[in-house]
Each structure stands twice: as C-alpha cells, then as structure tokens.
Amino acid sequence: MNNILKISYRNLKRNYRRTLLTASLITIGVIFVLIYTAMSGSFKSYTVGQITDSLMGHIQIHKKGYVASVDNLPLDKNLNAKMLEFIESTLTSNPYVQSYSYRIKFGAMFSNFTSTTNIRLNAINPKDEFPTLPLLESRISDMNGTFKPGEIIVPELLIKGMDVKIGDTIVLVANNKNGSVNGINLKVAGIVGQVMGPGGRDGYIHIEDAKKALRMNNELEVSEIVIRLKNVEKLKDAEKSLQPILEKLNKEGKPALEIHTWQQLSPFYNIIKMIDVMNISIQIILISIVLISILNVMIMSVFERVREIGTIAAMGTPPLTIVKLFLCEGLMLGVFGAVVGSILSLGIVYLLNIVKITYSIGQQSGLILTPSLGINEILSVSIIVIFISLVASISPAIKASRLDPVEALRTY
Image 1 (cartoon, rainbow, N blue to C red):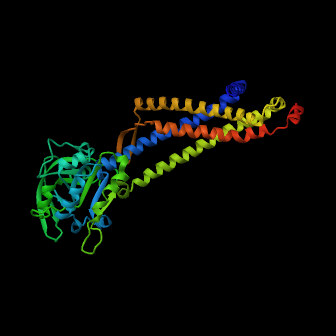
Image 2 (image 1 turned 30 degrees about the horizontal axis):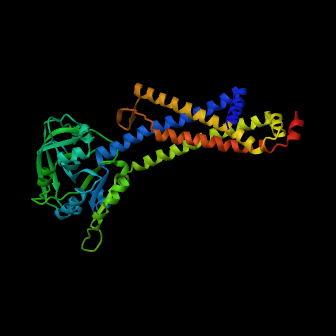
Image 3 (image 1 turned 135 degrees about the vertical axis):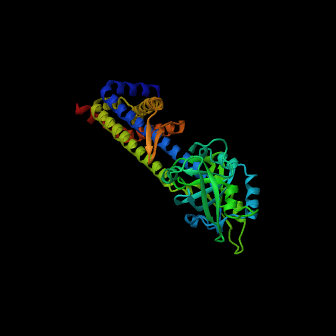
C-alpha cells in the first residue's frame, strides 16, 4: 500500500499544474459551501431565536380550537382553572421543561384621550414571562424598574402613530367573553421594539390588569401556556412527553387541549426549511464541481500514461493494483481539497466575526452577522468531497486497468 501511495503522489506531483488547478477547484468548492453554511446558519439562528425567545417560546398549549380561530383572539376558548391545574401538574414534573408562562391575549381600544385605535394585547406575569422568553425584555426600552400592575408596554409603531410618550396615561376599553364593556387607565411604562413575524406589534399589560379589564373576578382563565425547553434540540421528544395532556377529554369525548410547537405555529418555519433546501442545493453544486474536476484529471491522466500503464501491466501488475493506483490519486486530491478548504473556511469565518458585518431584515437594521462552523458541518462536507473524489476516479481507474498491454505499448 505504501508503494501505491508513493507512486500516486509522484504522478500527481509530476503534473503539478493540472493537479494544482484541480485541487484549487475542489478547495474553492469546499470554501463556498462552508461559508454559505456558516452565513445562512447565522441568519437561521437569529430567526429561530427571535421567534422562540422573543415571541412564541418552544411549545404552546391551548384549548382545542383556539389556534384555528386565533386571528379573532377568542376569549370563549380560554383555558379555565381546572385545565390549568391539570396542565401544571404535568409541566412541573416534565424533565424537558425549563419554565412556562400564562398569557391572556385579547383585543382592545387604545385611547390617549384625543384619538383612539385598536391594539392587540398580551397579558403576562413578568416573573414567568421574562425567563420563558429571555429576549423579550431586551426588546423593551425606556422602562424604569420592573413591570408592575397599572402599567402598559406599548408597541413602537403605536407610540409613533398616537403621539404617546413614556409616563402618559391612556385608556384601554375591552369586551369580555360575555360582551360586557369595561375600561381601565394605565400608565405607559415602556416601548416594545418591532420583531419579525406575528406578534411583533403586540402590547403588553400585567395579567392582573387583564383580569380587571375582562372582569374575570377570582377565577383566572388564560389563552395559552408558553413553554421554554431546557434543550430546543429535543423539541420532538419534549412534544411526545407532553402527549398525556391530550388525554383530558371534553364533554363530547374528544381531546379538550392541543399542543403545538413553534414550528407548527410560525410561518417563518417555511423560511427555515427553505434555507435547509438551499444548503442541500449548494452541496449538490459542490458535488458536481468535484465530480467533473476529478473525472477530468483522471481521464487525462489515463490518456497521457497509456504507455506507462501498458508497461506496468506487461510486468505482471494485476488490474486491481492499477485500479487502486488511480483511486488513490483521486483520494489524495479529495483529502487535500477538503483539508485546505476547511482550514481556509475557518479563517474566513474568524475574519467575518472580527469585521462584524451588519445587515437588515425588513425594518430591523444594524443586525450583526455572526457566522460559525461546527465540527459536524466540516466533517459532513469533507466526507462528501472525499467520497465523490473516489466515485469520480472509479471509471478512469477501470478504464486504465482494462488496457491491453500490447496495444498500450504499441500506441507510442
């Protein structure tokens, strides 16, 4: 085997220009795929983080039928006290759950005593909501101290449109599930910045204020329970572990509750899937580049070394050894391109993080690109390159092993 490696290395070195060109093409292909993977991974991580850590959590629990009519924010499909007690007994003992938070979602009229507009509201308990959605608090600006009852956090667009500022008193008017109208005065305590996706324009009030506005008296009813997992990578396992919640039946003998992951609730999950499809497409392009490059250099090597192949065949070299010789050359090219491409890609990613390239998504600007490469991405691309290098060498290698020694020596 050592002799085959030495001969293969010698043959590649002898035609160093062609070898260098082929290895460069493979290296460039590897760099292109890894850099694209790192940059798209940065966007993917940001998007998922904004959706899960700022808006939706990882899993949500609702009363059956709530999600289907969520655009209307139906108060008659809230989770009652018995349902909450049943769900909480399951969540507290679940090993996947890190924290959870109750929410009441409803629509109201927002008035600054001069003009009035509609607003979507999330009634929360900040002690539970902020640990469950760790990025939410960072979106809130100009808030002094903690979020308390009697205060409202107004979305940025509404602040501008209604000419409201911090410290102003506003009026919220809302209908409860029975149709009764009630109003409460609240103080503007903060501004919540925009974020991608549904819910990016919602305001926030304390859950105690929502109980007053909706006249819930002493019995709490909530629209949804938002769950944060200890490890989002185990989303599917966590969803399965929560299936006992679905065993609670309504009067009709059907499940009274429903469980949805953020992937099922967010329309942006389709964008995430599209990024994954694009990654696969780019890898297919890499495969094509490597395949054509290796195939070309191996075929040219066979044509240029016909007499040499005929000589070693006439000396009694088995066809299998000749096949190994050409496969080894393809393997060397693949390994060289994969190793050099991976090293250069890590260097480029490091420089990109130093330079700190900024980009914008919609009305959000100043976002910093933070590409990163994991060992899994590097290994998967490298294995693909090396494997394709071997596959591309098979046909030329077989062609070389089948050359007739007499005809090969007569050719030149």
